[in-house]
Length: 471
Ligand code: SAM
Ligand code: SF4
Image (tube, rainbow, N blue to C red; front, side, top):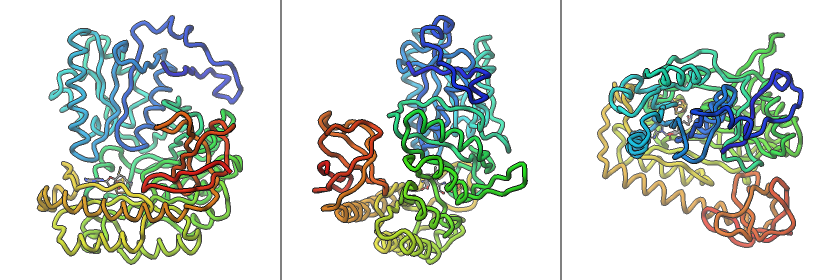
């Protein structure tokens, strides 16, 4: 069961009052145990923390044991077809649980819920509840409807909802790093992407609630926050006094919460990332020197068809600014799509040559998956065969692996500062943590504990990890 937190009026007003105990809540939790599974991007995982907070305020408790749950909620992703297949497969598994316990409620949240709406209820008999990403405040009412024997659905998309006043309940937390959502939705309309349809219009969360959340996290012992949005560089919020705050200013305000609180952010859009953001990163040691800058393709013809609003030359100019302002050590990572509509061998070679020119530290690489309702599905032809997509994807992955190894080797022989996040996956005798350019470092334990900053001499590396000894 998760740690429980029910906000009282005093707490909402910023006063510290003790948490109520699990026992106290459990006494009132008959029929109200919820199990949540999250899929997809970091935003979805952050949303599950908001959902948990809303449910706990309404007397629900969360459990990590699906077998004792009265309600199962799947927070879903719709970005590629296989993400949806995974959910449908998972629902089959839950069908066995429902056969044993007909009172079990099964709900679908997130992007797949928003995309399929009532179709999900029609197609998947086990599903009782469907709630889109902007409908989470309505979840207690929707669950009540289900307990009255009805199917419940809310997929309204909002132009205002940011869940700004909700304090997320941290799930599966290491107590050191946390995600902080700064905006929702996306207005960019990349032709391949379903996000604008599943998450609605772009809106930014108010600055004071972001800062209050970061301050509280720091007081609770957290030492790193990742500011999340589909396109963080277009963050815009206007105060009551009419002051317009952009992303660089927000970043600075979060960096000032405490010099010991590291700040990361994701995702940047190449058309919007400004030199002002890069100079703000340079100004503060606690803003991590790492930028996730999805390229999607190295071919201008494909970038145009994707409606990415930048060219290869523009993208490379942004990389040049990153190197000029933040230096060679700044981590840079990419997203790339292989086999988008009409992609030729020449276009694919342009993607490989972009990789070679930038030499990214890391990448998330995907085969194009046509999504119903997107501009690409309506206007273009998904004409690259699966076989060719997979071969091109493999070539991109292979080249990225070489660059990741090369970029990691750059750190061998150096002394690096690491924020300790916990035990290494492979050995309890080792700790792991990250350096500010987002590289994972594993080293034999000393006296340090989670949340400490330590210095490590990097002695060797793999393409994924730096290995070393405490200084
Ligand atoms: N907002 C971010 C951006 O603009 O880069 C990323 C959003 S999306 C959740 C994450 C990544 O999924 C994208 O960068 C893209 O590479 C990939 N993606 C999105 N739609 C896709 C599709 N239809 N097929 C394959 N990959 C896709
Ligand atoms: Fe999708 Fe493009 Fe928005 Fe990213 S910027 S979420 S890829 S539409």
